[in-house]
Length: 480
Image (cartoon, rainbow, N blue to C red; front, side, top):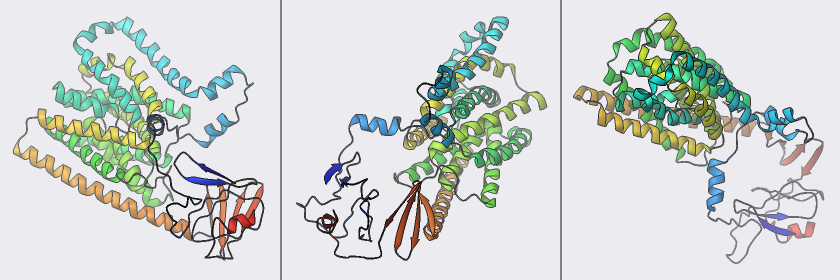
């Protein structure tokens, strides 16, 4: 019998046989077979300090390399189809098949990049785009970072472009909004293509129903709401709403080991209604500031439905790509109100964002969810501080901004609390089920006997004989 310590510092035992034996309290098993499944001991009684035991918890600090691997090289959340394709890839397969499967991310970035570059360079040569850069290069530099952040987080490029253009360079909010919609219709669609191509895990319920609500919200926002808001109100309102969301997400993530899901669990009709309303409200925000439906979807997925940021982030990117295309179409075709300045800014940024956004989506898919959330905290806090420092504040505007932040805290706090209750209800239902699927094993509970069924084999552990005096050093050794 060998004693080993895994990466997380937990001590486990290797027994002779076909595996490791796993036991969790309160039951103490009587071994009936010589072939055991995974087993780890957690003794119910206190042990002396000098007794190493069989499940001593050894906590140690992570090395810098382990820390970087955990938070920045966690690995992508891919669909089962892509995971199986990687596992079944034949080393002797043709080069093009190995390229598509093994280097899928590189191909996924290259295809939209080449597509947009061909269109942009042919247009630049024909219409002399080079003359636009001397007076507008600052937007090109801004979108280097904006496009990376757009692909990496739930905040689209407009969440960077709009506050920078309106606060730092005093550009009209209408021009900044139109530019945000136009540039994201290029960069975010490129990132969305990469996400689809790489088969990154998405939440399809959110994509479908938030998109439907977002189309209606975008149209109503552009026609009726945006014309009735002043530029300072747009600037302050945008940063205050998303700062309150970032604060709520920060409070939620203080609990680092919280339960998250890949997709919305136990999808029902009321959840469909919530997602549709979320898309509608987000479409209105996008109509005012060029970004919003992505953050609204992200907030509901993470706070209410407890979906992991690893799934919520690429979902918000794809969602925003479709919403910005609708907004661009409405402003240009229906309202015919896109200014020439917005097109000039677009011309100097397209070749940058079509690389930055897909590359950001690839990098972000490897980051730990805490890193993705941290980027949102920083962005929204900087935007809020910048707005208060730059926008001329009146007593009314200060009161409105404080009111928005306070309401946002209450609203997102209520959403977080509701999400906790929903999660607890789901977990209780799972515990009450007579049969559940756990880590690829079907676990059946009946009369104190737990049967672990795996594909092609069944291993029974008889827990009917409970032995309160079970000892890892005596009872187990007698079974060996």
